[in-house]
Length: 246
Image (tube, rainbow, N blue to C red; front, side):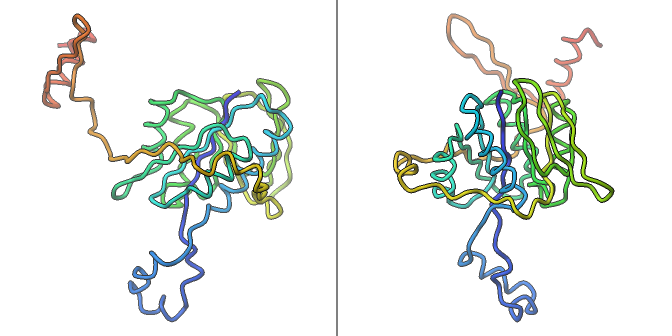
């Protein structure tokens, strides 16, 4: 089973003095000097997965960050907790996490379980989880505050809703949207566990939003790649012709 935690590094806006907030946009100049931390819901998801990895070493769990910040410390901590691969996409401009997620899946393949914080990593509007579920054609479960793997296909989950606490067993693949669990925070690893990873770095990639459709047709002839650049209109016509249209 393969798990993917989706994470966002965000500014600790609470560290900005109130009088600065009152001067409207002036707070922006403070941003380079304040700390950054994980979204609290993302951290809950990471800790729940860490507990699974601790009890079941056969599970593979990756982490996908979208942030411009240096995550070397986070990388070392997560590798010490037995997370498999740590990916960092560095956006240019205003990038939605869902677009980064699609690109990641295209390069790394699909996963069985996607973990997303309920505030989401797309401008904290709460839509990332449902968008991922729609893109992957996976069922989506909200307000998850605890879960563990029962076998290779089943996951026991605990949901905390306004009406009741609900437990259930669901099958993979699935998207789990993490809700509020105040007592769950990522455990700090021991220094000796981090030592093997001190000189390593996460997989980093600068990401820019791509064009709507692929504009290059590749043909392989005698192990040579020939490229033909075409317009959007020509590309759409090519697709219609391939599908038997006019």
